Length: 67
Image (cartoon, rainbow, N blue to C red; front, side, top):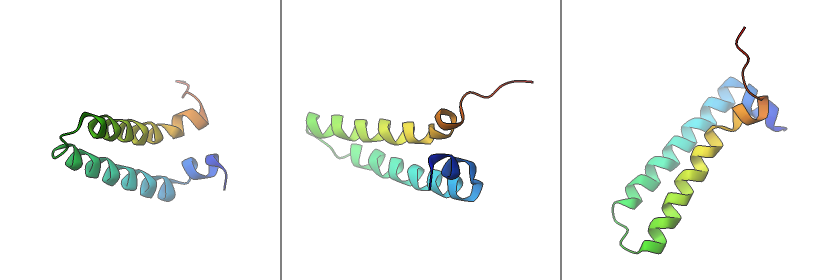
């Protein structure tokens, strides 16, 4: 499956985004109990990477044109 197929198939894309949202929420919960700076930075990096995945549709399809 190509990335275009993933991002342009609404049911699959919505399920993927839901999974990303759940993973982000899980990392937010783990941030509450982290005491070590190294682990804190890792968790922040994971959240950043997951949020960037949520923007994949725009990267794959390119910017939207306004008509």
